[in-house]
Length: 211
Image 1 (cartoon, rainbow, N blue to C red):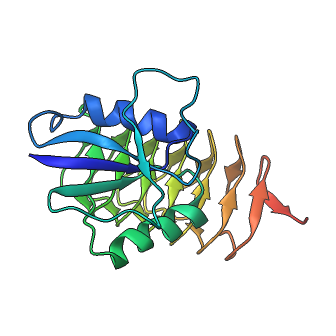
Image 2 (cartoon, rainbow, N blue to C red):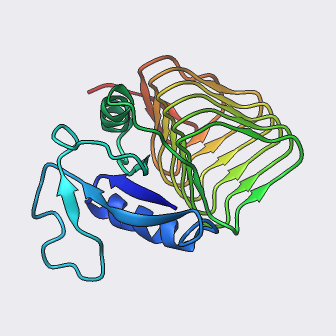
């Protein structure tokens, strides 16, 4: 039996705790040991959660520990997951049992996939991708490492989301579109053409935002 440690105890961390308890491995392959967070009082006022064990920086990995990273911002997910990896930690996948993984889907490690996601035929999902609830991925979609796909988002066939991309809630990406590395798509946006690296787009159709 492994001890699952959740990196991040804020709002998303609490959601990931529930995801962990709803997956088939709970109390069979792993139990939830607790959270890692540098905000020691992050769970103050909340009940029915395991304890905050330590910060990531100060945590000493034990023999039966495994990890998931519950940080909703790509930058910090990558930062803290890499800290755990450098300490020798191992990550597991949490994939909700209601999720549909269709024929020839390939998945990496460190994944978080929430309820009622539909991952269509021949998709490739790389390491440390987060897919929130009710997401639909069209056939042959490719999602590279560290990407975050928020609830109710949709990708058409042959879409590519490159490393460290973010789709916010209800984003829609039309078929064959590429969202380049580090780009962000705003909530409820419709993307009809390729998105350049490290840009933010928003609207219908989605256009680049300048800050």
